[in-house]
Image (cartoon, rainbow, N blue to C red; front, side):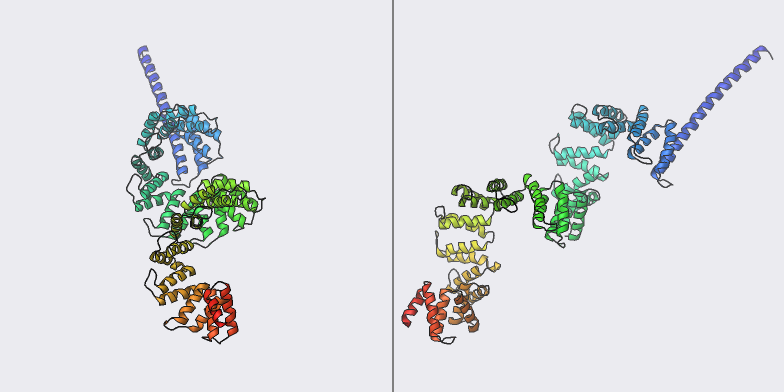
Length: 621
């Protein structure tokens, strides 16, 4: 073989060797890539539980092989597993190391994860600026979570200068990439009016999009908007739909849904469902539900009363700062209701509620100091707490302050202050204050007589179905005190209270029927009303009923009943009853004649100023 041939063969052999080496390298790389991918896929199967039982430990083992071979996906996944403690004890340092390995290879999810570690000081000191750096790297690769994080950071000025415009750009980009958090957050910005004018209509499509993607907060807001007609037409059935979706994990949605079932809004009233939802919300730590549930147990409202369960839920709510619950729990400890009686604990809860503005608790503490209940009497402290409660328009506190200043109880007597407090309480609907002022103005007690003001305050109390006010106002019109006499008005006012079965009002209306004043005369109706009042022990009605039974031509008179009522009234020293009964004894009418007893009764009646009895005594003598 010639030298040229030998050289050619050598060259060909060299090329072949080179090609062989390249092919071997390529084959190795392919094998290696296949191995890495196979290990990663196997790990993923164990994570997902596809074809195998879910096994994080085995998944971690395969991921470690894949990561060691250089897989950025495996490195990222190992970071996640160590951060969450899946397949191995939680190890934030290892998680951080794996995230860094993957991030060096521009793995977007790892870059975002690193950002969150710096943002929330997980394994590293808190460094918002460093977090922003990693978020920006991930965002450049269209990582929607990083885009959301950057948008939020720009909105709040965390780790970067506040920039609403840039923040909105990132949020919108994240939302366009399907990030549910971003979609919901944009909706909430429009709904709450954060950085933009409040615009529920603009918020609605964002909430709707997020809701359909399963965001329970968005589902809750859709329920809220439909229930209250905020930004959309009110639609209870749609509100129910979204509240039900959200209520599986959203306690406030469960609470609102409970209210709808209780009130029958968009559904039939169902107290059982409402109660179960309320319990669910309370167990989910919704403070309103905890207080509401405690209240149901406390009052026995549609469920058996259970003071111990009431105390349990009041305490839960009180620990979350609910001042109404703290007040209620304080009362329970003072009374030993559902819990062991404990004044110290009760007072502590009352103070917690009072210091945070609960007017009823302030009133209770004032009363404790004023009366010296388990504490030394301290009228100065009492006055301070009464005033705090009164500043919140607590009617009882206002009325009590009026009383204190009217009577000068450890304060200089001040009628103008008293009237001012009474007036505030009365205008706030306190019946006692309305009656007090009406009485003061009608009798001229500490104020000039003013029937027009008296009538006004009595009328306010009448509007609240107060029987005493009906009686007093009716008498003003019946007697024409400071106003034109008007029997019909008196009759109408008295009659309003008949459904309350007040014996005084029954007697007053009976008298008008008997005399035909303001109404057509009707003895039978008068007789019925007098009897109803007499049965309740009203002495004047007992006498009036007896008079009708004994003297009027009524249907089926019952002399025996009449005499028993007359004797009862006389025993109560009613002067007219003693006069009538005395005459009956004198004449032996309906009863055995007894002149001595007759004289005794007539004398007693006369001594009480009943002139007819005095005349009868003169005739006997």
